[in-house]
Amino acid sequence: MARRRKLGRPVDKTGRSKGVAEQYAPLPYAMLHSPAWRSLSGPAIKVFLELRTRFHGANNGRLILSLEEAKRLLGLGKTTVQRALEELQEKGLIVCTRKGQWYGRLASTWATTDRPSDSAPATQAWKAWQPPSRTRRTLQKTERGPEMGPSGDVVVPFQDRRASHGPTSGPVRPICAVAMGPETGR
Image 1: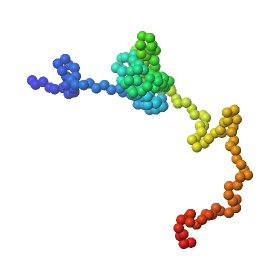
Image 2 (image 1 turned 90 degrees about the vertical axis):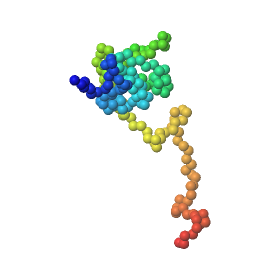
Image 3 (image 1 turned 180 degrees about the vertical axis):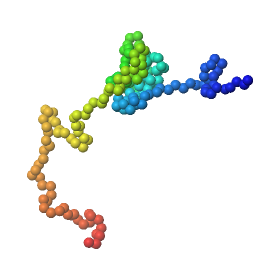
Image 4 (image 1 turned 135 degrees about the vertical axis):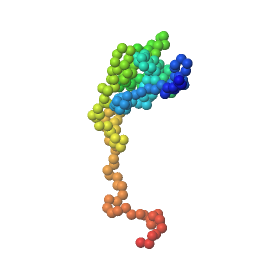
């Protein structure tokens, strides 16, 4: 009897798949459509995606990403990476499970809140984050507030009301017809 070929990927002698098994980092639509995700800065998204690519199913809570490594991999400055991590924590997308130390060169460990960590279920704290309310009206680019002097007083520009700026009666007429261009035959 002839052996039937099974559908799917080809396997080697040990039963493992041949070829490159590609990995991916799934992100839930609920998170991608949340106000927390949509308000993230570009560096924060890059740092989050780097952390998620380090998640392999059972190591959430032990995701290691140092400032130096993120700087090198993502092309960002250390301060920008630090601000991005703070932004991600503030918006509930990650939590720090162990603070890093300079002495001993230990990097901080992180957990994403959309997946369960070692023994705790997923908190999904990003669902509770809301953008701050805008109660105070901000000035438009065309509007200007009063100019303040060095003592804190409002500075009013000087206007000489006695100066005359041309005749007050009648329309303004050209001084010379040549200055206006060739005669058009009026």
